[in-house]
Image 1 (cartoon, rainbow, N blue to C red):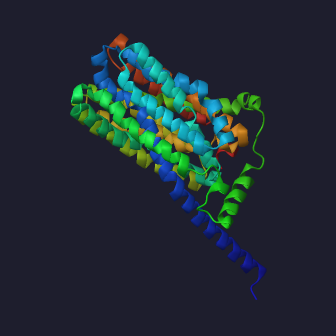
Image 2 (cartoon, rainbow, N blue to C red):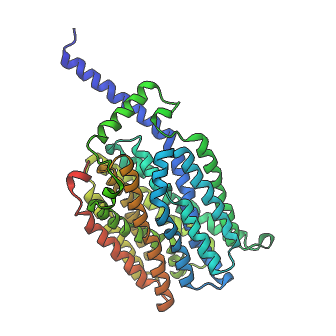
Image 3 (tube, one colour):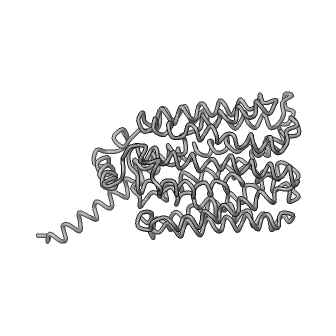
Length: 437
């Protein structure tokens, strides 16, 4: 007869084996689709940085007009982020995420009709309204399926959509600008907006049929697997705050997280909207060559995001992982600005900066779910993301205005680099007991 100890050990080993196979099944089923959706989302958000290479001359826009138009996206995003995420928590991801993707695809494609600064501002604003809730909605959606100790890696598998959008989108955008400029009498930048909106439209329609709202809706899981996942999530949610929305907005820890994320986003959108411009300023003139070179920093970022997320989950240490990555991002962008007239040195520094700033994101998004649950998590995640993404308005607006004044992006990039350094320091104010889970 087996001893109770041996039987218990065998039972634990069997449960661990079942957990591993179940989470692998969920990962394979959900993450590739969510990743592809984010690639499409991010490409539609920042491809205006490539359009800028032709659009400003065609439409006689100043750098200030471009910076304001690029950034005004985030005003619409900010205003509708929290209500969008609360609606998703109530009605489910399947319909709501699908709706978001379809509407932003249509608005992104409508950029072909821009002829004036006013039209540019209006379409960018409503593109932000349409996309509001997508990113925090997916971050929230992942908390329905994966406990904290697995979440950095899952966040990374989703969020590498940002650098992959750069790896794929850079060469694609450059090729479209070069090859299709004048095709059927339409400018290359217009073809780029039209063609790159199509994946979002197709994926949005697919979402409505493909994505289960919650564990219980997943027909591809057995009852035993569903129960295991639900038990793990219920156990983790014990003790988390699911209080009134006023409690979320009055929580100083939530505001600290928002401030940290604002610093991250200063770096992300400084690079996202101006990387093609920085590479061109280093001496690369051909649009396709600029597109190919933008893939290099984003390629390094993919590796950094996966490696740092895996290390953070394995060690269950998140503060220093974030701080070191953010500091490296700041140093990289600083060096890229100093050596901006040397293509090789600028590309090396941009690769370091882009890898560092993007590696912060999977680690950071384990923070809110460590203290919030339920509707509070939906509102808190959305609030942090919306406040943080205001940097998407501030960063390109500052860089564009400073470039018009000084004829250089250097001063603006120094501001972006400093923001990443501040974010690195603020992260150390997070209570270790809360974020290192």
